[in-house]
Image 1 (cartoon, one colour):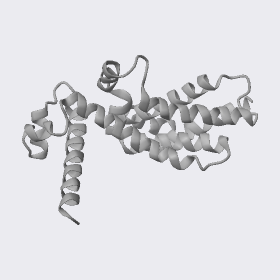
Image 2 (spheres, rainbow, N blue to C red):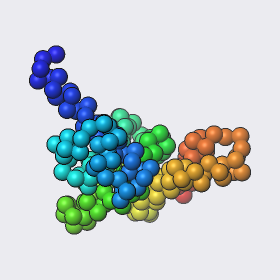
Image 3 (cartoon, rainbow, N blue to C red):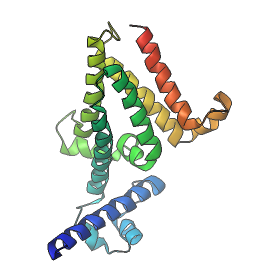
Image 4 (cartoon, rainbow, N blue to C red):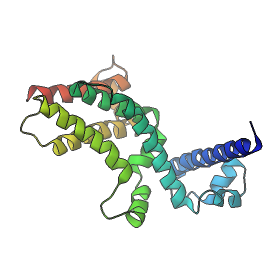
Length: 212
């Protein structure tokens, strides 16, 4: 590996360390309580070093937001090869749930914390959310494909997509906040909470399929 490649790898490694430290602090201590100085202390670098990569903590927060959506879109990309849209819809729900449950800190930055949306409001066109829209469009298109095959007749694809997203979002939020973990033993003590979340989503899709 040449000098240029080593420098580039070092820069990328440091960038990822900054994001990981910031993500941890944003979730554990809150956005307002987290400063550039605290992030720098977490990775044992000076604040000046961080400013070489990001102009402020708003910039870091939005970078985390985009990073999380990149990860989620990569997982969804694999599902494009699922030809039958009804099976693809079920796979989307399962993949989304697994992403949220296995990446709770990223999920909070992407879908729960308000700061990234405030950044988008200030820096993007009105009513625009490019990262979230790409994910939602994939879900909506899959539902439209289902409708072309006779599923979910008479129901607007956009509304169904929103319902499906709100269901899995609510389940993931309940899991991350530990409310669902506390309830799961009463709901079904013999099933793992992750399996319970997936079962609820599958039941919802099955119910929709029966209403066609």
